[in-house]
Image 1 (cartoon, rainbow, N blue to C red):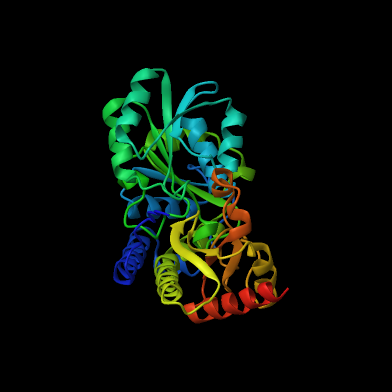
Image 2 (cartoon, rainbow, N blue to C red; image 1 turned 90 degrees about the horizontal axis):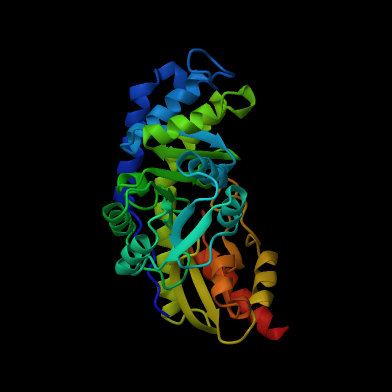
Length: 366
């Protein structure tokens, strides 16, 4: 099996991202303001908490973007707001030829969008699809992998689309932010959308960062006080973003060490193991026999998380042992019996391999 995981930042690169973000924070917040819980409500003239606006300006500066807005609904909400601001109901949208993430599919259905697929691994196919469908009015590209064999370069996909058609490009940057060096809006896309809950932030807050014209349209949808991201939530977003890059770099190191030791034969009963973005960057473990479900049950008894919360949220400390992603199961249902995914979260390789070895033994003895 050929897999092409995204290239994570090194620990040194992650440290520099942390330092850069803190520097940006000091450009927009006085020292005493950083030690508060922020303000509330529709402060005038911006019709939103002042703290929230400063946090948005900080994030925009950090990503080199024109503007940013924090929205409710986490990553899915951010994508939905982004879509509604850049494309009209009933229009065609270009997407990758792969199983769509479930909430992305429901978003298309909500807006009556007509997906037109092209294999993003084949840049010529993108050009051909756009030329054969001149009425396509936008594109959505998922930064993380949708299929195990996806290997496209995000920057090259964006460049190909932009050179072929004058349409806005939205990037689903969930599972990419603070892991890779550049996100979509830094690679030429119109907007990047992602969940801050996946980045040690508060529940339910998403982020749209990129072109001001699109962000302004979204901001007009947030006139009501009940739509606002409150000041304390915005500060929690910044605190989470600050800690995320180094934490995620450590997780990446744990994944790589676990793979190396499995490939060296440290754990018996494993046919193959891979590193893949599914949707987080995880360790995929394929067993010699169809014991995946039994291994998952045994792992939970040993402290492994049986499911994600926000995927890499602040609540997820122990390693997660879980089924492979829904999009991967759609591409090959057999994975459900023979393969699991493991995200170390805040744990190290020793913990992951101990739980894995003990769980395989119990599954084989059952």
